[in-house]
Image (tube, rainbow, N blue to C red; front, side):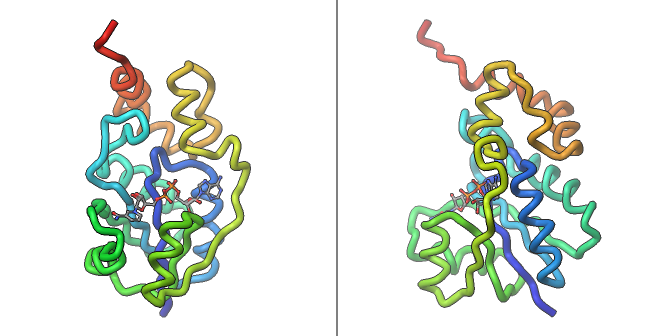
Length: 170
Ligand code: NAD
């Protein structure tokens, strides 16, 4: 029995994340997705709540027919303790998947095996680019799984992002 941890902010969950999870699903028996910065929402860079992101990831993962756990993880103010914090929140795991340099460093220092994954269409499959498109009124729907489009529509996510991006100084 092997369990793999995949960490991310998923603001929002997109097709790049989806490709990575598809590959991970072929390598482990169970997947744990850690939703990082769980305390953040209603910000330009973090528009969606932890619960909304749980919904996005859970809906997308149903496609892969693999046992999975989707767990929100709040940030803490001390990087040197972060891995212990993560371990206290998720089921035991043997391997972690990430490309984030800080996350790689912290996990490796703690003796955890880390695997990096190739980036898929990084210019388009990117949270930053998708949020920019939402704000500019460009098409973004083809960069995320269909279920995620439905969730973002249901919660009126684009309107929220536009609202939190407004300044009250004008
Ligand atoms: P992210 O959502 O930006 O990315 C998640 C993963 O998907 C990354 O490994 C990224 O490389 C990968 N990815 C993105 N686009 C891709 C594409 N097109 N193709 C393939 N892969 C792609 O999330 P992140 O920034 O890596 O999340 C790390 C989380 O860990 C954050 O929430 C951060 O706050 C948290 N963290 C917290 C602490 C602390 O609290 N002290 C310390 C370290 C990290």
